[in-house]
Length: 237
Image (tube, rainbow, N blue to C red; front, side):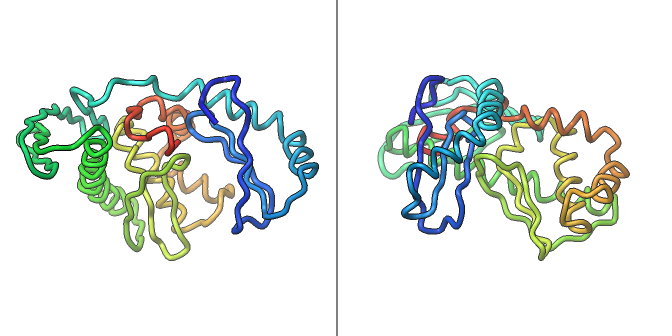
């Protein structure tokens, strides 16, 4: 389905699904995931039962989604690290290559928009690892947390997560968020190493490290508007 306001919702059958579920993506796209051989009537009743919640979530997603931007971008600004990278397309032959020099991204070689986007995403993932991993270690030291390892992902709906083994996953899109918002998210996930839930004890842990968490959490909910549209292609969203 497309991302306009009048498009129907999509229903997708999944062999892995054990129950009906609905996903409202960051672009406002609605996807109802159903187990195999689910009767159409059951799907319709599920949608009607959850219609109010779905429409509220979709409206919020449409309000916060970033505007479409021309590609390739002239610059890439990563607020989390206060950096501004200028993109230079050098041309030339051979496979597509990307090199960095003094906050300049130099792309040389041959390739269309899709190949260029993949090359920029590779660089973005590497940059997120370089910025977010040491920042997480710093915040953990400051507040006495311990964790297993860090994984950088490009996720459509989640800013971060923490597994029961202490693996913390961080969304590459955090690079586009203000530093104080990123720091709150890191505290949030580190607090899950002590409380694998959202109980009062969990929020007390968050508040002890980040007293302004409520304000920052609201900002993070609107954070998708800061993510350049090229980071997620239409098929990703």
